[in-house]
Amino acid sequence: MIRPEAAQALSRWRDVMIGAAVLVLGVYWAFFTGGGLLHWIGYLVMALGVVIGFAGFQRARFSAGTGGPGVVSIVEGRISYFGPLTGGIVDLEALGTLTLDPRAKPPHWLLAQPGQPPLAIPLTAEGADALFDAFASLPGIRTEHMLRQMQAGGDAPIVIWRAPTVRETQARLH
Image 1 (spheres, rainbow, N blue to C red):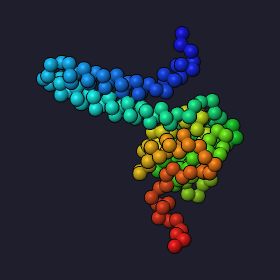
Image 2 (image 1 turned 135 degrees about the vertical axis):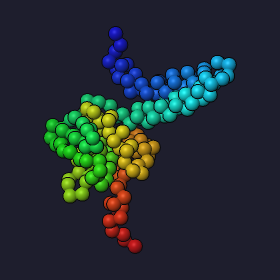
Image 3 (image 1 turned 180 degrees about the vertical axis):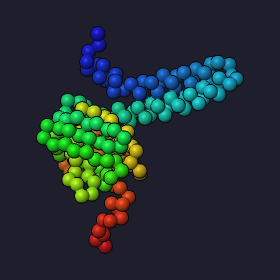
Image 4 (image 1 turned 30 degrees about the vertical axis):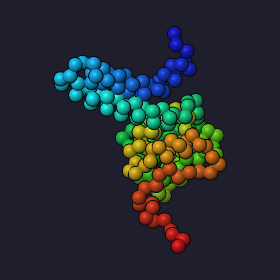
């Protein structure tokens, strides 16, 4: 009954809507129940709603669409990509750098681990939305920076994250 485009948009923003509903429930409990224990639980539920909504907003911004080439799968910290021309597997623990290449059509993630060629994953590949949680688990990653770079486009690859061990081994000019 709902058009596929509308269903896809609702699905993309689902976590934001859930966070808003939890926030409204918290506001009701905190301000309209007359005090008591439910009053204080309402404040906690309001905070939970804000956290859920914020995380959902970031996840929705990460989504670059669908219909791109290939399929992404993530199982126990192992990212697999199988496309029509390339493919491969990268373990998150072995990841050295995460780079965004906006020059490719569609833009690609480049996942590099030492001693291996980088794995290129289109942002629009089937299952690529699951990469948000995988990337968010990388130590020290700045998710807001990553999201801004995804929206900005550009004409050169942008290093989003580097493993601490890679930083230590880089040659310095001065």
